[in-house]
Length: 131
Image (cartoon, rainbow, N blue to C red; front, top):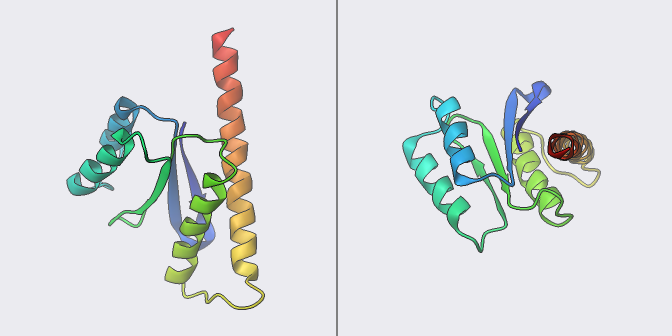
């Protein structure tokens, strides 16, 4: 699955690359060549090819956040990576973490919901295509 979540209120875009092949990543790169430097492409491709890496988050020079997940259903990696993305978005927006952390709670909850909504639609479409 390759999908984007637009965080309109903060003017940010998060690209999720989930269970992608190196060839699918290459297509993503060529579709986003103005947003990903060659150096970023090389580093990300190397990490995707590394079988021991289950996921990672990258903040690209263009301001796009990229999340790679080898397993999109992971109850450990998905919220972990979403936290990193939300932390970056909110810190760059000048929102400080405090005892209530409401901005973090809302953004993490919203992004997690958006991610799983897109992920389950993608897995359902894969099942339909197999029929």
